[in-house]
Amino acid sequence: MSIWEYANPKKFIATTAPVIPWAFGGAILCIVVGLIWGFFLTPDADRFGSTVKIIYLHVPSAMIAINGWIMMLVASLIWLIRRHHVSALAAKAAAPVGMVMTLIALWTGAVWGQPMWGTWWAWDPRLTSFLILFLFYLGYVALWEAIPDPDQAADLTSVLCLVGSVFALLSRYAVYFWNQGLHQGATLSMDSEQHIADVFWVPLVVCIAGFILLFVALVLMRTGTEIRLRRLRALERQAQRAAA
Amino acid sequence: MTLELGKYASEVLSAYGVSLALLVGLSGWSWRRYRRVKAEMERVERGRDG
Image (cartoon, rainbow over all chains, first blue to last red; front, top):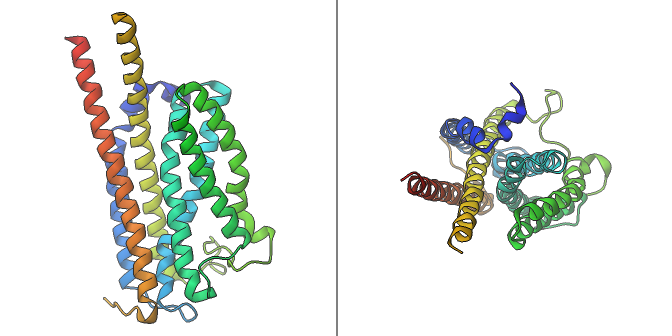
């Protein structure tokens, strides 16, 4: 069996439809457990007080914002190279999800930064690259809506996605590229010497699992919607031609 | 359970409030659209078969 079998829209929908409720259920479970655990059952941090509770939203949403764009990049490359419609529609489906995650990361970062840094916003390398990533998400969604021909829209948005990937990677690695800036280093590391204290780390990992499952559920569901919409429009055009 | 947010209560609560509203809004919108388009597709296919 080849992975390219899933490029068949019917096969994709038939395979993913049973996965969606499980992914949604898992996402809700993990997010509810992780947030209740983090919000009610963890202590305040010495330096950050109760604002440490914001990491359970900020870190997972920022991770999904960046990796969502990387997923769109892979799907766009598949479209450009192999011309599989499902991959272009999967990238289209992921964009609003990634955009909302970027917005959550920016908002939670700002409300955390105000008491900690004394400002809602700073032109810090990571913050700036994240804002640009949000604008790329916005532009990507707008470009899909602006072009009536779906193949042309897929071509142009794929090119936009390639360009935007620079900022997705910059957002990820900005704290390593530049030493200046307010944003601290990576919160999450597999190395127990480097990552935050276990009391915060464990609920954070549960929240991250929840956000990943939510992203998977939403992208699969929205891709199914886009596939059906494309088919509906094709049938409408067919009916119009037959009537003419 | 403890709920002592201290002087940062407004920051923490606004972070949670806005984020959860966005997540629920996105999920609800995606779910409604999925159901609506699926039902429309089934209706059209029934019409074609019939």
